[in-house]
Image (cartoon, rainbow, N blue to C red; front, side, top):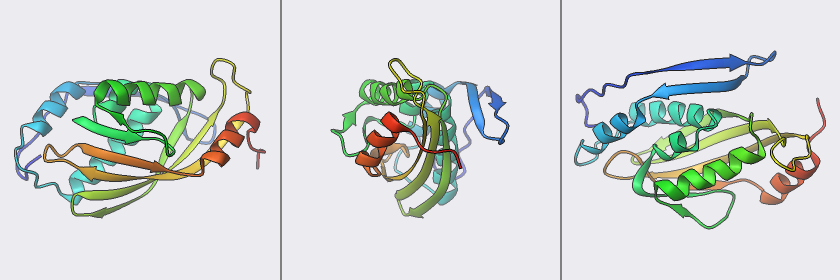
Length: 182
C-alpha cells in the first residue's frame, strides 16, 4: 500500500493450539480478495519494511491455515512460487496448486517465521515447518525442516517472485522417515 493509504480488511482467525503452544489450526476468515485489490490499487510501489513484515506474518498464518488460496493471495497476478528447487508455479491458480500439494503431505503443519531480512523491495523470509506426514499414503512420521524464501515484490506490493530453499534431499528423507522426537 502507498504510505498513508489505509486498507480495510474484515475477518477473523479461529486458532487451535497444541500442548507446546504451536498453532495447529487456523481457520482464517478474511476478505483476502478485497485486501489484494486494495494493495494492487496503490499504484507505484512505495513498499515499506513495516508492510513487508506484516505481509510475512499474514503469509505465515496462510501456510498454517490449510487454505492454499490464502497463500496465493499474497502473490501478484503473475507472481511465481518455486518450492524446494522445483519448477516455478506462475499465477494464482498454479501457486494455489503448489501450496495444496505441499499441504496434502502435512495436513496439520505449523509454519513458523524464524526471521525476516528486508532490503528495499526484496526480502529473505526464514521459516521452520513442523508437521506429520499424515496425508494420503503418508508415513505418519514427524517432519521438522528449516528453509527460506527469497522474495521480490512487484509494484502492487505483493510477492512477484519467491524462490524457496532448503535441502530437498533432507525434505524427502524426512517426509519418508520422519525425525526422532527430542
